Amino acid sequence: VEKVKEKTHRLQEGDNKHYMPTGIRGIDKVIVGFQKKQTSLIAARTSVGKTASALTMMSNMTLNNIACGFISVEMSEDSCLERLTQVRSSVEIREFTEHTMSEERKKVFYHHLDTFKDNPLIQIQRTTKRGVNNIRHMMRNMKNKNPDLAIIFLDYIQKVQGSDPRQDMRIQQKEVSGVFTDAASDLDIHISMMAQLSRAADDSAPELKHLKESSNLEEDCWIAMLLNRDLAAQRTADKKEKKSLDCQVSIAKNRDGPTGLVDLKYNALTTKFYDGY
Image (cartoon, rainbow, N blue to C red; front, side, top):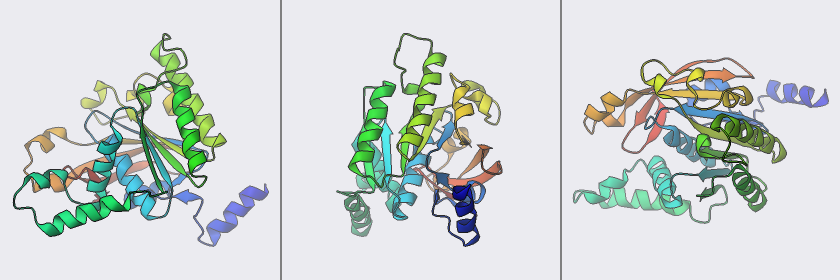
């Protein structure tokens, strides 16, 4: 009772510190921000921008002095850092292949890259050991390394295996979802998990029923965001147009508040999401 009262008093005084804003105003307007001891899903079809959205949020959050972790079962650490630097600097890595690239642009990229070195607010790890117990162990080590760690992004959950990989994938995902729900509470962090949507989402606006393998992902999370972009438009867009492609985010689940649609922009060159207004 006292904890709830304390929270209401803080909110009345404008203290939202227990929320962790994503730094994307359209999304924060709906969810306010992530909270510790909870989990969320960021789901989309392949190439729509699951990883890009997580790295955009991570960049924004660390600028707001929020300690973040990123665990990938796909991309290497240097690939994640490269994309994170693109997001932060607004300089595309492929610009370095162009002879016309200015020295100023190079300096901007290197400046932001150097800010990540030995930065306690950022931990990035990749693993090929996809067992749920190993991922949980990695999360615990991240928290031990920095007790102020507030959020971990996991890319992506359907590639994480249960304790018995011989079991049906749906049974494994039920276990995985439960383990990370408990880990968020035990470690006093928020865990935001990237998730893959089934091909059925290609023919219509994405819905929670399109989550691959397990309905438990939907049931266990506090917040579920579904990303939708026109990939055909991206393929045919020229370089200028790729800087401001449309994206719609459906806040399909929000236990603490409203749901709704958020219109964003996506820079396909630097893989950054930003507000479209």
